[in-house]
Length: 576
Ligand code: DGT
Ligand code: CA
Ligand code: CA
Ligand code: ZN
Image 1 (tube, rainbow, N blue to C red):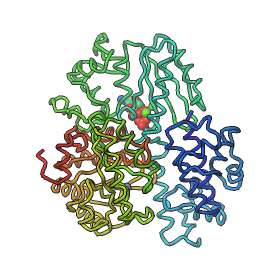
Image 2: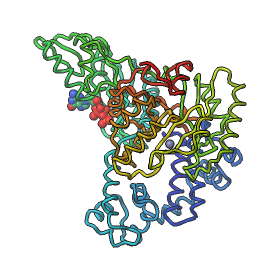
Image 3: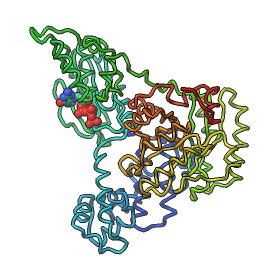
Image 4: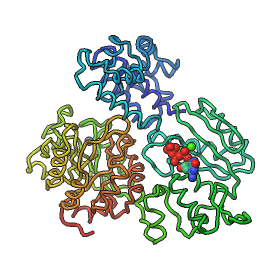
């Protein structure tokens, strides 16, 4: 079952969307949207909270609290159901298509009777949109492109949702009678940015109790198929889960096989064949005679092929087998290597939590440094001023007494303007301990202009980190068009770190671009970009992306000691 808070977040977000679509009060819609985020980011469980308790959650007002209370007691929200009855679910899905939005979704429905993303694709493809008021020449083309983006991620699940679900499934199945081992495999174990389905592997003498345990879980909405070795289900969130149960002595071979990737597996099998062996999910066997060589642990399987164990994020056939043969596998960065976080927000701008709360949570993670980097004034809706920024700096200095072991850094997230300039003059910038600079506007500039602006941002002596470089959002916004090599070259030359933004919707840079940046000698910062205390745990996902990009701790500036980071923040040359 999804966490109750997440269920409520979904419902409030849907309510806000439907208010927008039906042309309701935009401020009301925004209030529900904010409440949705507040509930999703709230660390405590909503269950058992009364009206008063609910209203104590920052961002939840009286009417939201009443709706949540109604849901907690009756399982429904009347006002939401009224709106649902007026608008087909497909219209809300259309609203999520990049470049459509609520107003156009409603116009498409009212004027053309278009009520689903499929209908919309057909109408745009047949050029039936251009006559509509508010739809320009190229609207159809843009909408088709947006639908394509949505479909590319189509049906795939983001890493945070999949990880949370898989952790729960593994815990539940491990407790089933007779289960001796249980873990997830597949693309999730390789830490891909999205997963098609979740592959869970377990060992037991008798598989029946495990299969039964899976099918009976409250997460399960539908059983797709069930047999003695494999059961597939679909969860209430629509995620497919495959459970395979093997005998304990085949664990290693099965784990290698079902972790994949397919391309990595094919390479391994070819190596086995050359050595007169046969590799399958049941083990490594002699090709003639069929005697089993090994299969109990992954180590044994790799060793029998003449290889060291290869970390799952590397198993993409991107040169890892060759590197393993040459003894050149990277010593991958681990989450435990991180000593701090250089990008976070508070409720001074669009974060949900107050400064002290964010700092306390960072301290509890055992960090030795932590930067607060609220948005700078050019992102107009955040209403930042010099006075607010300086007041926050003062507050942060005062919090330092409370956290002797945590060095607090006062920073900001600057906006890279179309020409590559940033907010504030040099005198003011010089007052920050750390500056992240990011693109938040003008996503449509041509390649030359995008490249120029990012190179200039790297060359700015006050900019330490380029935030979410390509600005993509998985499934909803493509990357900007930019010559990445030119930007990486500039970053390496100027000693500017490139961020791996760990937010599961972004994971920006993505794995392949990390791999490429690394060849230029770029340094990286694995940041949470937290907008709530719970988000401070996001670097788990950024580390996965970094591992898929072959990074070591040395490549990542926020694994460095404060002594070393201090030089980096002065943009002194740090020796490689
Ligand atoms: P996904 O679920 O699309 O994100 O990606 P995976 O990699 O989890 O793929 P999935 O779920 O189809 O299969 C899980 C693993 O099983 C995969 O990583 C490799 C292995 N596997 C599945 N089918 C084949 C196959 O036909 N040949 C080989 N060599 N391996 C396979
Ligand atoms: Ca899978
Ligand atoms: Ca699968
Ligand atoms: Zn940002």
